[in-house]
Amino acid sequence: MQPATLNGLLSATQTELPLPERARELLSRPTILVRAIDRGSLGALHPMLPESVIEASAANAKLPAEERDRLFNQLVREWQRQAPEEERVAYRLGVERVKFRAIALAALDPRLTWQEAERLGDDAEAIYLGLLEFSGLLGKGVTKDSADTKAPADAAVGA
Image (tube, rainbow, N blue to C red; front, side):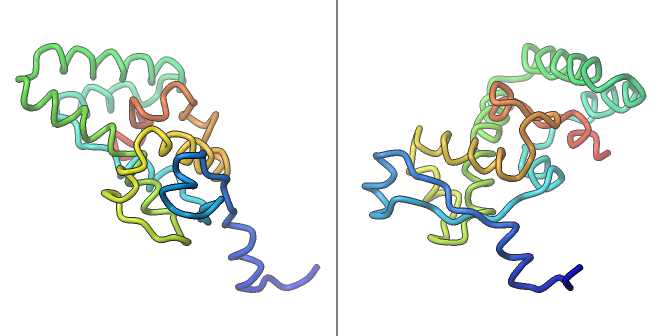
């Protein structure tokens, strides 16, 4: 077995993702170099939920993941139905910005702020999903359908 090297580590934890056509034009390049991100960092990018949702989620911690996630989503929906409009909008904007923040966190070349990633518009979705797939996060509490809509339930409760 060969000893690990820094170059080997860097090589194994970064990749070039192809850019959608419009993003190629905006960034004047065909790819973006990204590094892998971990589940905890992705969860930390989500907006904070009210204490009542977090406490109720914590009570479900011993349930199977699928049931825990279903109950978590139900708690979030109930809170959003009752929350003042300003809180609802702020939360939904925060969730929408997760993909831009994740791209900014992972982007190595070119480096991007989350505000710059946001300017990629809908093209950011393809980059984000490619990043999640490369990072091994799709299928581990994050699916293509849920990638933009919710934090993993265990990330929301700090597990």
